[in-house]
Length: 119
Image (cartoon, rainbow, N blue to C red; front, side):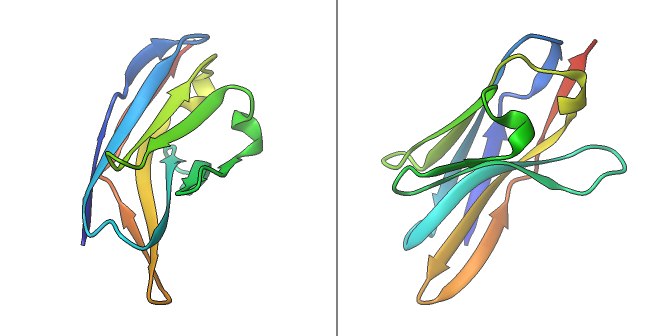
């Protein structure tokens, strides 16, 4: 099992910045991708950004140039730096770990942290 604990959400004005952090514990071995997803009210959960254990990143088009994902493999943490936030970024942000071990891929999710951007 993998446990994920997020921190760093909050309320910010449009144009401001927030930094989300996620600490993973438990069975973090095998190859894994860490990332962030978000879900706004009435909408499906969507990709924000992911980063592999080797550092390859992937961003949703709307976040490119504004958000930066990073990870510390020694501490099993992943961070999302969000700049130039917009009201449409308002959502619950979820930390995700996708672990592949012995050919089996499992997704783990944090409980989520609220990000609210006021106009």
